[in-house]
Length: 430
Image (cartoon, rainbow, N blue to C red; front, side, top):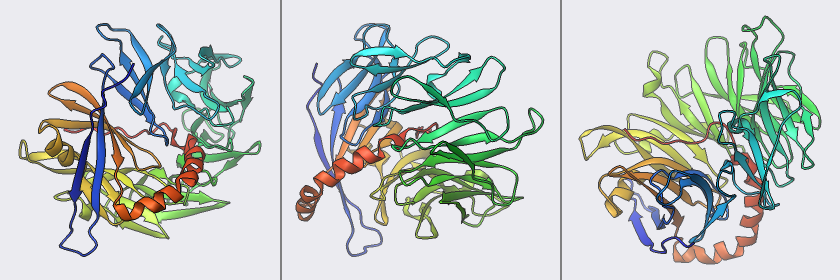
């Protein structure tokens, strides 16, 4: 089945204060249609521009998984099979999640959904599985019969390798990379219910406690292909974002407040998130930040009319997705808008899409890949619409892009699994 091939070429010149060298943001925006239902959900967007979705069949309530690949839509599995829960790896495998209340984890391999059950487990929630990476490995967290939570790497042959704990009763996986390294959190020894939790990195059969910034707790948020871990840790009386690299935890600091929260980490070690501005202010007044080259950069001043924002995604090109509270021109009230940042400039994608398509369009979810493409789940007058935005380069950049096409394909494979994490970006407009 083929989706609609209609597309729009949209361009916008963004000039900040009349500065020279203002960037031209232009996208080819293509609607993804032909799914049949009004409740389509985007699961992921891979670096080849393939969109992974779950949507009801036309005229019915049975939901199935799909891949939309450059205008062609194909089913994944059959009626009653698990829903799609991940992108495809280089081996052609996709993770699925069961439809029953246990939400067991499956792997689609050669067109067959294979259930994965750990020895002695009672539930293995599909939402707590990550991967598969290009090696065919997955990692999953599940509850044991003694009420503890364990995490195992599932090898391509189906073997479960328990990665252990930091001495407590539970371990949770947060991210896995192509090398099979795992970042997550685990309890330390202590009284059940009062055990401190620390971030960890599991590599080469060893779980390393990443420690804290002087306090008692830490949390992992992401893991890149260099084995760097992004998270937050307590300093004693504050909570700061950090990047852990080769035995060293670097405090990213704040924008003046007591709290900074991380969200995403690229393979260059650049991170995004949000930070409070003043210890006396509430978290509702936080600003999106970009951390690179040892500096935390406040992105909020680039978001027109914003008074609060948070960044959620960064790719290896340094492009960022962020949400900001701005004045919504439809109702003259404060509302959440999606912004795209690139090379020191930003554009309001909510206004951009409304101007080009429909004034009542709301963006409900967004996904960014390494090629700079953006998948959008939107609502227009109560109906769900999915769009794929593909950047259109300026003429002078075409030669560079063609020369770097092979490198981009390699980078896409490298970054694939580090996109899988619990804290997926979910953008909700108010």
